[in-house]
Amino acid sequence: MVAEKQSAPGKRSPWAPDRQDIIWIDCNPQVGQEMRDIHPFLVLSPRIFNAKTSLVIGLPMTTAEYNADNPFAVAVGQTKGRKAVQTRELQAFVWRTWPTLFQCVRGSFLQ
View 1: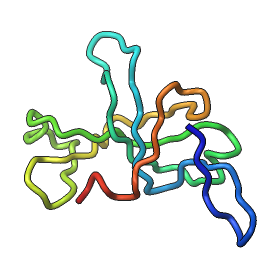
View 2: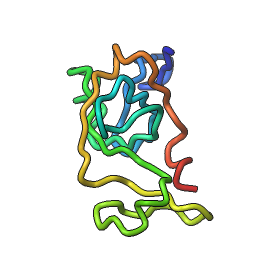
View 3: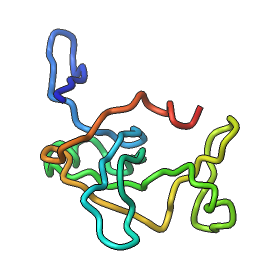
View 4: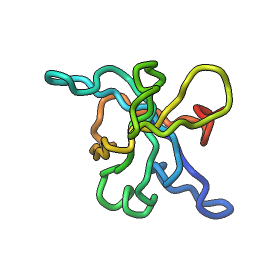
């Protein structure tokens, strides 16, 4: 998927994840107890870093109920159903070559 972000009137630069974006990451293949399948991912690294290095650094998000007692799962959002950011699972992905990476509207997972 190629998306573009406006950089200046009349000019377009290639899309790159930006800090505070929520993107969808496919964590497969996985081994053992690692996260698997597609999860929302809160981007912590700034756009300029992501664009220059092709890496994105951030935290996975989850709706798993077993995180209710997890002190490292920070609850976010105000709708029913627990949504949490996994603060102990800082991860980095090579976003340009990752097979399924989707940009999500900023903050839509938190609504």
